[in-house]
Image 1 (cartoon, helix red, strand yellow):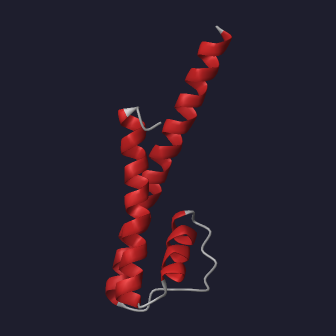
Image 2: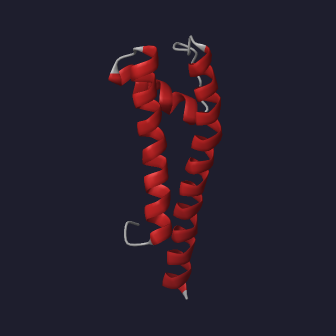
Image 3: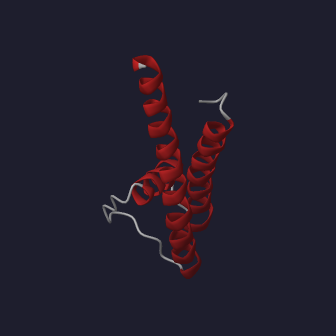
Length: 94
């Protein structure tokens, strides 16, 4: 994956979104690193348990932006993984 430019870009984008969300909530909301990462993962995977929630207007706006960019980045990463898997299976069978 790392050798493929598309895979590298997708992996960096997903990692960057998770890191940005985690750092933002740590600084702005004052949550622990674990809670900040947990909230980012729960939000971007659209699980949304509701046990943590942003409390300020800037955090709420950031969360909306995080969802829009993060879900897009995750979908692009999954698209890359599925495409590569299909290509490998096709090459192996034919």
